[in-house]
Length: 110
Image 1 (cartoon, rainbow, N blue to C red):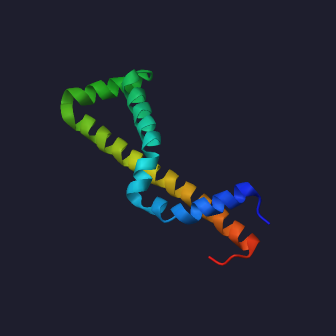
Image 2: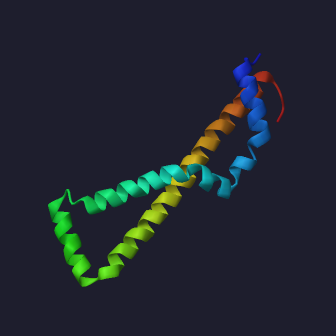
Image 3: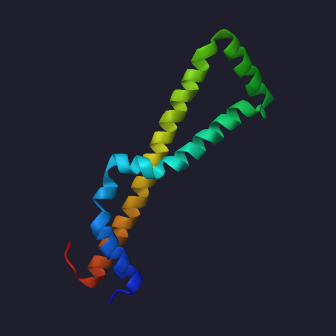
């Protein structure tokens, strides 16, 4: 027998599981985490806490003004998209596993 919390989860997940699997919905749900990560990367890059890296960056900027920033933007964008999709899919998988375990414990077919 399921307790009320588990029964509520089963009902909620049965209604929303397919909607949450869509990629656009996953991007919308995980975007705050990605934005925080991007801000952290940029703050770390431009803070100048590591002097040798700052010297190399200044030397690169003097040679190729825009290419370094373009590479950084593309890299941060790819990292953010990967982290967002991975974290939301992982959470979806955990909820799906819990849903299937509760159904099997209850003896209800999918």
